[in-house]
Image (tube, rainbow, N blue to C red; front, side):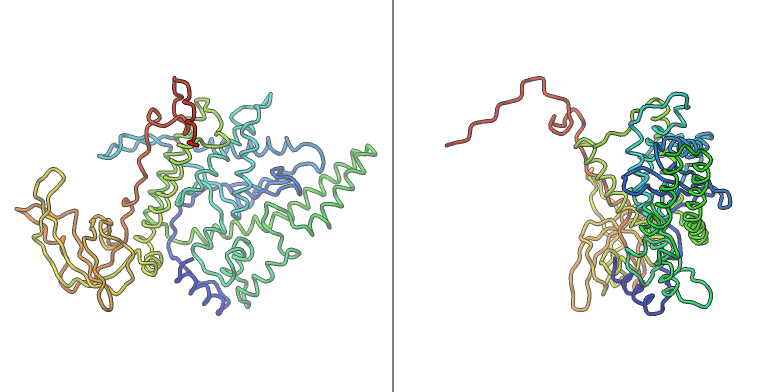
Length: 496
């Protein structure tokens, strides 16, 4: 949590109302998302008791497992609903023309989006996917609508969720906490009812008082995936015992009655969270979406298209653990995605840019000197125009020389820090313009700002690059490369 966010949260606690952190949205929100609210059976790791899911607020699907016995029917019904939803986006193809950096690409025109109430629910779906994807396809069920196929998709969507900026699977509490600061702790912000109470409290009350009411599990049930202990002991235990008694006596009519009672009870438990999820979605949709969110959604569509083709071609389920090289590549991709996402946010969101000012990852300075005719040698030994100018800044600076920077006023130009010298009351920074400079014969004087101009700089998104990994042929066998044809060498004896 940055210093600026901490100050705003303290102010929210003082005023007892949530305060905005960002007035723009950095994640794409689909016009037809699938909201999924899982509820796990008490005492078991990934055994759902019920799920409420759907794409329409007033027509949710409530799927309930029986009190005793297998939950195969629930899993099959869940797989049919979610897989059918995903298949609805595997119809229309669009083509992205080739550019200087990439070839022609074909991708689906849209992609699925699953919204869950909180991060624990997303983690539960990931756990459920891991439990389902290795199951054999059941007989008599279309493999494309089966629980194993659902396991593959849940695992894939959960993996994509780890990439900052990806929007294929999102937790609503995470999105709300990104855009509003409450006066409660980050742990309390994972309660959907509580964070909504701060943001949108009822009339004639404050966010704090509404959140205190929402924290009462007897008045507002937790959003899952685990049930509240009082709900288990007071309501579920009674229904389960009555069902067991009816099953032991062979009273089928009583069993059906208790199943209907269980369904009604779980509907009453999940319905408030279902309504809160749609309220949260409405609040988030009211924020303008940034161009960067559209760009990242295109990347999501491309990944979804590639995964769809992999699965359609009979691709095997994801392994339990990645081998060493694949794990390193994935870590590099996550680090690059996180750095690029934060850099892109700063270019589109004044609050994110202000946060980077407090950490020294952005600075504002006044132009005090200019050198429009400065030249430099390229890698090929050619002389090229590289104008320079000097800034004076009082902001803290953590960026070292060589960093590629960009200004929010013109994101197409690229600059670099050549020299940074601390001075009393600030720093003296020599900057170089690396793009759109013109030529020696026809220079572009707009590349250099005027004396006295105020300029703001932050890290360019493309500055962060993945490390170069060796090819499989050059990877040692100990890290997943091809095995050596020769016998493994014997360890040398240690010196006495």
